[in-house]
Amino acid sequence: MFIDDTIAAIATAPGEGGIGIVRISGQKALKVADEIFRSMSGKTISEYKTRTLIYGNIVDGEDVIDEVLLAYMKGPNSYTAEDVIEINCHGGFISVKKILELILSKDVRIAEPGEFTKRAFLNGRIDLSQAEAIIDVIKAKTDMAHQVAQNQLEGSLSSKIKELRGKVTEVLAHLEVAIDFSEEDIEEITYQTLKEKAEEIRIEIKKLYDTAESGKILRDGLKTVIVGKPNVGKSSLLNSILGENRAIVTDIPGTTRDVIEEFVNIKGIPLKIVDTAGIRETEDVVEKIGVEKSRESFNSADLVIMVLDSSRNLSDEDIEILENLENKKTIVILNKTDLEPKIEEDVLAKYVKEENIIRTSALKHEGIEELYDKIESMVYKGSVKNSSSLVITNSRHKDALLKSYESINDAINAIDSFLPYDFIEVDFKNIWDYLGYINGDTVKEDLLDTIFSNFCIGK
Image (cartoon, rainbow, N blue to C red; front, side, top):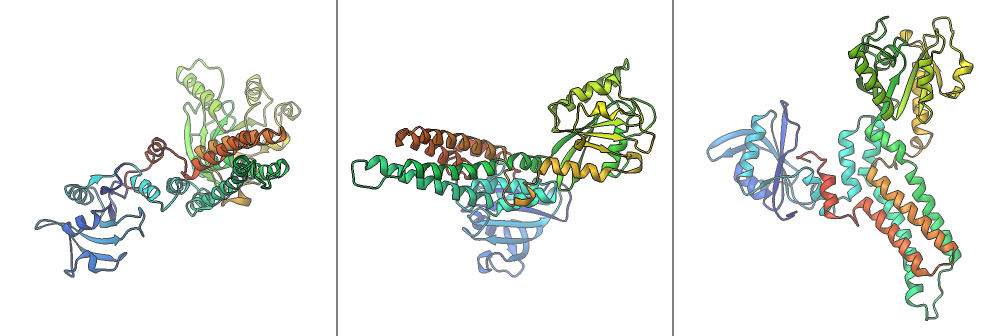
């Protein structure tokens, strides 16, 4: 990574639009901009105050490429903490492409994916957890996911990790004094005090780790699969949830022959909802492929919504599906409640708790709100909404917290066994390192490359 070179990229999405933005960052940003920009007033860029939009043209010699607004942000008070130029030109393919090509001809290279944000991290403007939050803000699918990401971008997780590492550092300082000056007349930290401090750290790490399951759902969405026999109302339920006729509904069993996927926002939870072909034995080759896809989706689902026709008795096929739900988060829908009920609920109770059974009439849009409430309660369990500013949404952070938790448990076991301070110190150093993975203090260059490769080029 050559931090002293100058980079450029298109910062807006490809395609036609009102505005396109080309961004330059680095030591030569201002020099390059002066070479290709002519303000309408005749002044140079440096004669204007920084963060001022300057009206003018991008030129290649005597040729005008586009009429633009240019902003100069002098480092370190910029996104990358370097000199940054942003050129606002007309949107579309040609203007931004020609401007970028002109810039790259001036000893400037194209930015790598996420390199602007990577420079912000390397230059100390943000830490690694804040850098990762930027991509979460961009990719957020719901208001709550956006709020959680925005809070992390503002430093909520950074502050908590800094606080935890500070407590670990305090313990390490006491341990090092006890180890290095054991012969001196210095009051040593007692095993009881060590135990109290370690327990306090363990509780905070565990509390943070416990938000990870809900946080992952907020970030990536909850893969929800609708399963059941043919003609029980799966497609009608999907249409009710989406508020549109996305799936074909007929009285003919086997109408849905393929997997239908849609994203939907339910009470702030992004659901990747999948309507599957009815699971049954069939000789139809095409339908058989759809049934097999249904089984694959079923096995990989985060949440399964099984739909039963309450106007029919339970069949062997229903029982087979229910038996496969044992280790799955499951909601059972008793559909068609507008018809006379015939389903044996006492038999159903052997496979699913009453609290996870919702009675609906998808055709009449009845019971859908109860389904939403149940999904919300299963996902949040009261923990996320009460502390939405501090939720672990990143699998890398979750893994680091798990390793920290295992190390603090090892430390407490060592304290309980009255092992020498040297052994306990090793565990606390591990905790300090693992927590440092989250904010980037102890992260390696190859991991940085992997993280920022997931960003778009212009960010």
